[in-house]
Length: 490
Image 1 (cartoon, rainbow, N blue to C red):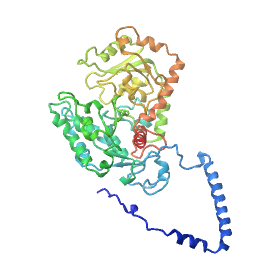
Image 2 (spheres, one colour; image 1 turned 90 degrees about the horizontal axis):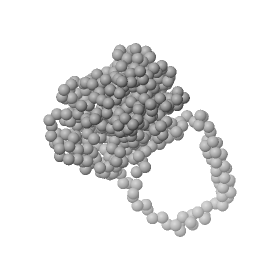
Image 3 (tube, helix red, strand yellow; image 1 turned 30 degrees about the vertical axis):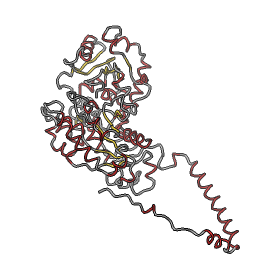
Image 4 (cartoon, rainbow, N blue to C red; image 1 turned 90 degrees about the vertical axis):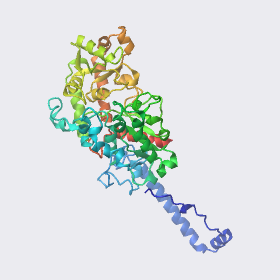
């Protein structure tokens, strides 16, 4: 049960007789007046000097910098050497400048039971039972990647499913430094519903709209009964959606997906989603999970150094499979183009399931190429964009919606500083050659762009420790800070 509001502080004060107060004050012994005034004067001088001294200390001498985003704490809120208990220590306000998060304890059917019944998540394959392992990171990939990544970093690599955002985020938020167990002190309320896993069970099979909407409707009925929902109508609530937002935007009776986003209870909820709608201000795009999950700051720095010095023998590359159902399939065009430009382009044909959750061949290809071609996927975005950036390769986009208006919290505001844009129509009609465009970039320009790409890497990763990295912000840190700031500004 959530604690009820107490109204004792609203009690009316007793009446005060001002005449009595004045009489008593005049009758006070005048002999105490001057010593008292002198003492007050000295106290004021002391506090002014103390304030001036502290406010002008260098930041390096202050133990908690106001610019530093909090390193996540433990779920029991224990005090570590550099973190403070967010419920019991007043200095937590310095750590959690954007506010605190309360996590709803949902009935297990909305999250835990979905993982327990992982074999039901995909009717054709048991892949999700591997995907949900290790807190949503999947199986370890060290053995398969032994010849591609440094031996010391191999344990930080997993076969991570691109749709595991909900599980990964839930595990992290439970141990976040700014999680509060007291809803009255919360800036935002997190709803840990695994909507993508729940809805995904019904997307590719012969299920009707009622089945696709049932879990979402039950979840909203539960949430709307909570007292802190009623206080705000959900405007200070947020959720993660581990599938493209279009899987939750069925507007017509015979359209694709669930109608979750259009349900009445979702009208005010902020949504962190791997592919957002550019026209919905409640959506915020967050990176697809990749396979690299660093264990420490040192892992991140070692990987950045590795990709910055790795030998790149190909000008550009492409990993993808054809989509026969698409008219004028652009990925099919790029496959043929790269095969014809084999002296400049490396290619991994992902037809079938060869590239499911990544492959050593893909990572090796990205590591060895200056540029990586990134067309739209089945929708405008694709996980490969982030696999490419993690490997220090410069992405080449053909649709602006693939990245530029999706991940504003995570990618630089100057697209040309880290990427190349070539209009897909110009490529298809033959008026532009991909190779000619890329050859115009000098080695100095390529080196500068790669440096910018490598600087992006930390903030698109999801770290292994549930408490987060020591000082480096990962994608979770950026996302939680972003949504808290949004809600606080409302």
